[in-house]
Figure 1 (spheres, helix red, strand yellow):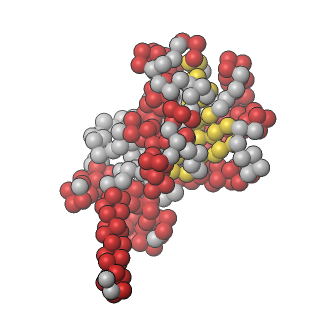
Figure 2 (tube, rainbow, N blue to C red; figure 1 turned 120 degrees about the vertical axis):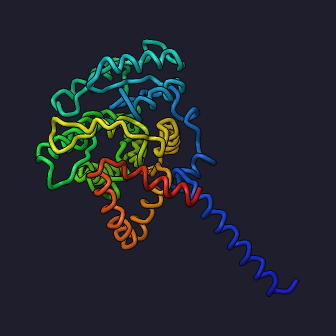
Length: 339
């Protein structure tokens, strides 16, 4: 075989490999590092068993699903949110479908905006279980309104709940982890913590703030390699977050019951979260296409990302004013063309 033919075959193989990877990416629902960990990494059932896991925002959506999947791994659970009756419902289902007993689950009502209560809540967890292995900062609220129409009170509420409340609780738990020189701080931010989208100025600001805070905290904790700080950045996930999203006034929510079939199932999102937690990944992106593609464009091709975002942003605002779910329309176009 001549050298020319060999080089030609190698080039062809490289091209085919590139095409295969591109096709896989078009169907990906997580960043490449995360999907590699799912394929070759450590399994949650190996790494998370017997841990004490505190989940905020556990009464619905991602937090609720996380409680269900963790209950099957043999962990001790602390479930927190403002809605006690919903937490009781989640606990009952954990006991019905999981591997836990009643003593393994603590219902701990928590208001992220009531920062003075966070120290007492932390002491209650330590008194019950003696340790906190994993803190999952999942509680939060979203927003759907134009900046020009939105009251400043809405932005204050978003910062209080999403950012300051999360930071406050983390600071209460952190000394315990430093004392033990181990622990995991897992914060559910959002793809909107690394990119931006119209109608969510306050929400984006709060999630960008979380990214900045926890990225800095990770650096400051470099002398404690046993303490892992992880940012989870999901795209659209099936939940009530849009229904409960704030609008122009802090007392109003969207109440939207729009179709969510275009969004990722909460079960798949949590499955990938657990992979991230088991493999100590620092930041993961979890989203179906085209939302995952937009994250990569913002990270590596920001000029293109701005151009696309400007085009789609105008359409999103127009659809919002007309009562149409913009995200759904974009997804349907992508699905028709590429899947």
